[in-house]
Image (cartoon, rainbow, N blue to C red):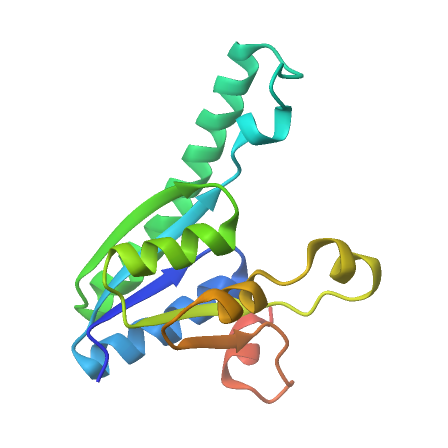
Length: 160
């Protein structure tokens, strides 16, 4: 069925639940996985002249890379616990572009990710990365909704 699954993460609890389910699927299929986190490209945010001194840009990027490494460590641990082959990558740029590009470059045949329900103005401004990936990807995209019913098995695991 699936041989190589790409799993984007933003480090959120929702994303971690999608990764756990994706790793379960990979194990059932005998697939390998690639975890990806897309960092902000601070150079793109600053403009051609830059708004912050270069050393501050470097510190921000270093801190963001450390966060990304932590998020991807969860993917690695989850895969290792299930005996699933795993590699991770850190990308820069627009998340949906980086996710689809990574899937194409690595020959992935499925993308597993979470989908958050933003409401109101946040929905209009930020949109949905999952929706953008769905519309751009040429391979199947399995999305896990961020909202869960009270009786969902994962919901019970998040309660104190």
